[in-house]
Image (tube, rainbow, N blue to C red; front, top):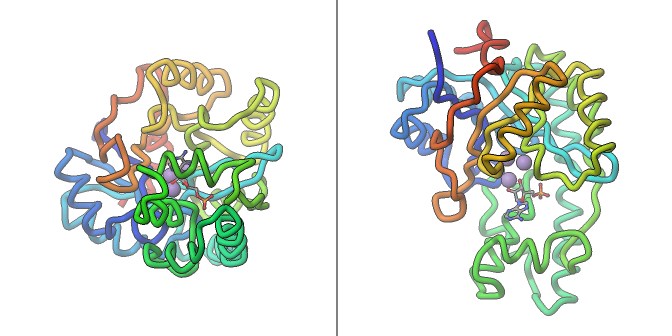
Length: 283
Ligand code: AMP
Ligand code: MN
Ligand code: MN
Ligand code: MN
């Protein structure tokens, strides 16, 4: 069995995507995906549906999630793959990570109100599929709806990133806890989209070094937000740190995501695909 078109990173309405797991599965299969994982933010409530839909569409499946972590003052995302979705430690850890989102959303709304946009919390809620998982993406959709910005990218730039009126600093899980939840549940931890973080070279080195020390085993090399130069750069980083490589679109929505499910270059040669570490976890 030699898999090439694996897509191991995307989001459904269970977090901040706009499609149901079943619709995502059909779309992935139509795009030629052989091995799929749904990786909702801080939540695994969609895993059963996603696995059933993967099988109904002729795909193999790995369980997935994307955990929000605070490292060196930045938010870093750690994808977990192939874990036991009934693991009690994992369920508790994710629930605790989601816990601060409700209060944060009210603070985001207050910040936006001061910038002249009232009732953003109520507006964002119209887009929320999971009341436990109100994210900045839902606010962004509401601000586009009312014409405050032309697309969600502009909302993030003008309102939702550091220094902007709707930005609320937040402490997520620790790197150590997130990696341990995943690995203790039998899965593999993956550093998501490493090129997206605003780290110095020293901070990035510390991230990879500590990630490995805690038991992390892979890095996303080919992902929707990386350029071709960044594929090469993080292929080198994978070799340097002896990490396996992952591939995932990070698809959220047909209207917002420029990379569709499965529509990415294959992994560069000479790397260990993360799914080879997870051969006995593939369903
Ligand atoms: P949150 O977990 O509430 O902080 O929201 C993070 C999510 O916002 C990410 O997973 C992305 O889906 C989305 N996001 C972050 N930055 C941007 C951006 N610049 N443009 C569009 N979406 C973004
Ligand atoms: Mn997201
Ligand atoms: Mn992410
Ligand atoms: Mn993601």
